[in-house]
Image (cartoon, rainbow, N blue to C red; front, side):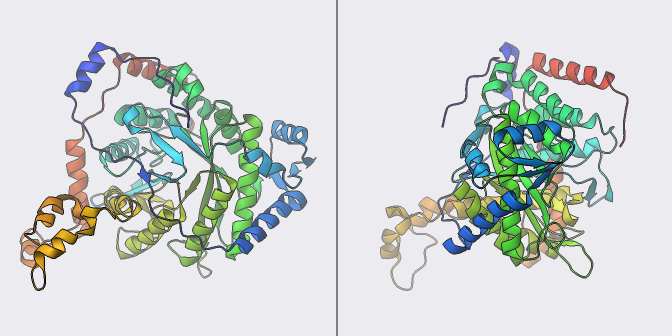
Length: 512
């Protein structure tokens, strides 16, 4: 893997002096798995899915709507184009996908926060896209820019979260056509972790690239991935011009895109696991292949966002065994295709951060870890099927992400971990509390929650008998009180603000 090129700007003396006096916020390095992936599909099943996906692309095809340039690119590449339907000869998509890297580095403005996506890594990013926020004080309401900034701060302060994410909530108090500028600036100024760009319009993708050129330097952006952005496929088998327009801008600039079908089983895909996996593979191959038509070697991630459906109400369901099977199977398909893999998260359908939310979230997070996910969007903060972002749920989930780090590390088999000296020292009928091995290792022996309550009943009752949501609210308050903004070079900050002001002046407010 090639090293990142050096950034153009050094930050200046004032920036360096401020950086020396800033409080350091501890962030765990992205996960490197030392455990095997769970492979649920047999070699026969994988071959059937791959063969059927090629048949879909050749016989049924995919639609690239309202995008004549895309149709022309496909025609030149050897596809059969009829109207807006694109049919790919068998092998064409897979051949094109081969130029996408199996692993790449996304740079953060703080190089210590750089992440590697692919291989055995797992990068954790927060919730994305909810228009509503629910907290313990205000209940459920439309999200604002102040909420957005709060989530960015919580993400920055969260030890186990590696990535600042993208649309952590949808700030409805800012015009639709301008809010991406404020959201990007929040990620750039309130955190120094990696972040995502805007995809809601091709020009907003271009704004994202230009703001990154101010933040990192134009030459650095030209040679390095500084954004990983979410490109959803309009399943089944449809690639709309807005998402593809954003993909075109990012791929041309060498920036990473998650090519992700949006699947609700029984609505956007077949009800069967095999049928859904086949459609997912066909859609991802077509999308990644198209990114490589734009620029061979552009980073691309195999995405799989999959839920099942309640056949009585029509509502999406989360944390189900069928969704887990698809998550495991898609991981196998992604590895065979040689692409990084995005899936799973803190998915749940609960309206509150309650037992339902906890069960469904735990099922989804563990499936993501064991399926070989490399980039986990929605890793914390998700409620109500993705309609709601919750600060209390955010810190609950972020705390539990520490469990994934511990599990992924595997089992230590060193001489010290074998503990034979301790077993000899204690012998039959003794205890290990005071032995030398325990004294040497107890501080790091067990993962410890920063949130959950382990006090005896009497102490817990004397402390107010708080439930987990109340404990989470207190932790939100503490993290925000402890927050210190990471240093940003003043000249860079002024240049970003000037760019935002200029872009906002160039267009009237729009709320649709």
